[in-house]
Length: 67
Image 1: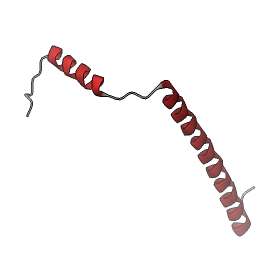
Image 2 (image 1 turned 90 degrees about the vertical axis):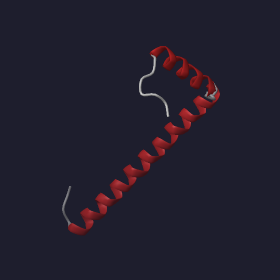
Image 3 (image 1 turned 90 degrees about the horizontal axis):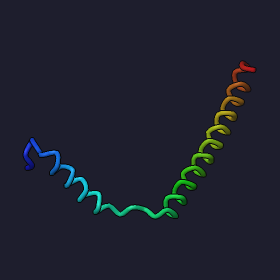
Image 4 (image 1 turned 30 degrees about the horizontal axis):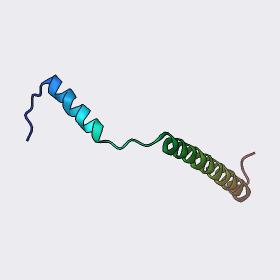
């Protein structure tokens, strides 16, 4: 196990070494991922909006209350 107290300089060296091991995505991969997240968020937004409207209409028709 590692010791409980670590020299801050040693810690920063370890962080830099671990950061160098990371495989960073390219700019193109980042842009594609961003567009996909935004597209799926928009699809989810449309789906939940439509589901809410349909359920609201159904409750209004069944109970006769609402608008």
